[in-house]
Image 1 (cartoon, one colour):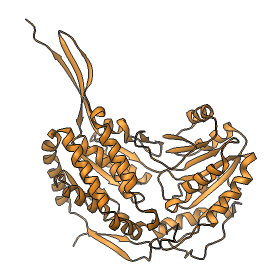
Image 2 (image 1 turned 135 degrees about the vertical axis):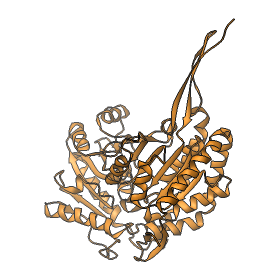
Image 3 (image 1 turned 90 degrees about the vertical axis):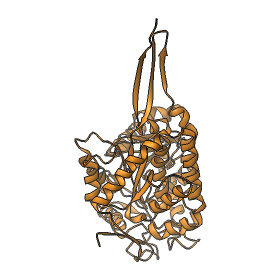
Image 4 (image 1 turned 30 degrees about the vertical axis):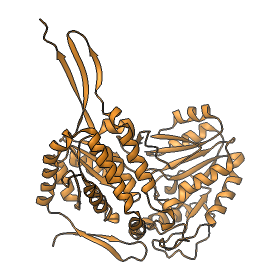
Length: 460
């Protein structure tokens, strides 16, 4: 037997699922089948591809009663929140709705002598490497538009959510998408790199750690294979003096703590106008003290365990270091905190950017809050980060928010909301958050290549 991938449940540390990885030869065969299948898939009418993808999405939704507790077992999200099908369906449905326009030929001009236009051509085989924190929604961001655009897809999911890719493939196959058009695989890192380096794929989309993104780029070096990445984040919130305080606290703290802080665009640091700082902290602490940490299968649980003990250990280390350097912790240790995956959510003040908790990605239920004098100080602090995914601005003044947003090094600017992915907008980042863009019309552009036609007519 070869290497076996094991999903360790954060609920109790047991092995919830395990799968054997493919050999290099078997993996190459998967890629070859995908390449062969793409020829026929890419020539199917667009309307047919859209209908099949939508049917696949609906088939995933029909599994939701099984998916929700399965996710709780695999990565710890409480069952009370009902899974991810709402966002999964919203994103796929939007990409289906805009496909005809987004993939339409760009007409450059036609006269008696020439006809000129640009077509959008599928890359061929798209390799999707998906993360565990929102395993269905992050995967569908690329899977749906890639298939609709005429690519075939090979999906490799995170070990922590080992069963997600299987479920998606089963649903899509049952809906009528050919098996070789959408394949789920279990691969180790070495085989993954060999496939990318060997040009098995025409485009790679990776969501995960900065280190993982670098590994993808190294594997693709010299192949000219496109690589799109969404990597780390340290997303800031900025509450201005004219903000709706209650709305700001409710949204930003939920953005920091939901899913045990394991959100790609979760809020990890908050800057508050000096006049509102004390009130903001008081309200934030009250909210967090009301959380119920516990078994995610219990419908009363509002905060589940982190997905893995090592993730919780990193958050504890960041908190401990900050406290040693003078930070103040506002939440006493919960009785349910076991020193392992079950972790007390924490609010820190008297923090500085010299502390790792304000610089390194935490990806857990902790947030540091700092007072700021004005927009200039807030912008400087928000930009003092190696990451740039989203920033959340709170003010009644749209023009001011836009002006501040223009100065922030980020992929998305939110005003009076946070931690949401609008499929009509490009999902993108800068700096160590990565490169590329998903969803929206731009998502289709990144999953296809332009092909120009310059046609001279024969005239008598």
